[in-house]
Length: 209
Image 1: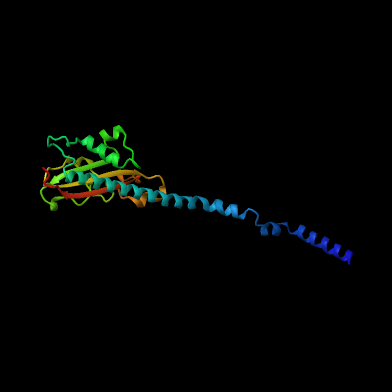
Image 2: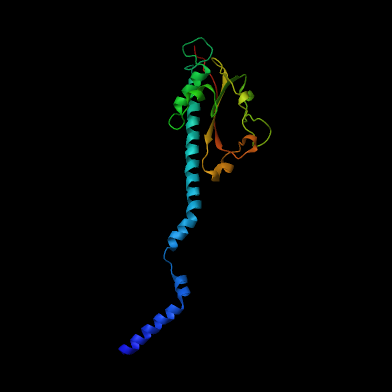
């Protein structure tokens, strides 16, 4: 019995030695690591894209809230322009107030306050609500044209006037995966590098004294 068992073991070992390729093919050592290495890049790109989209839309809500807050102060006369009052704010002072409202996620440098490159504010008065523009000002008729910042102003009206305030912020995008889909603002036809956040408010000022 022992001799036969020994012969069978020797035969099995000899057979395995003759088939090293089959043994290697059946081995699954490290398969999980290889599979993870293959899937890691697209997986993390998708995860980062989801996170960045969430952060961008959170920043959009922040800009919208700041627009509503400052437009309410304009409506009630807490902020005025050109009325010779202590509540009068210059363009730069108003931009600083807006930046203070969004400072949790968006930081404005002194240079940004003076010369806008990322944050643009448009506050104007109109004769009727129907005269308020409903589209974003573009440099051309192209669906991917950049915004026309030359048409933006800072001239809100006084008591009982009809006004509009729009805020634009170029939120920088890092994840390439979502750049072509998150915005249609493409300066000079190039691949977009930012998500244009827009906050809008329209109102009629109260008849404040």
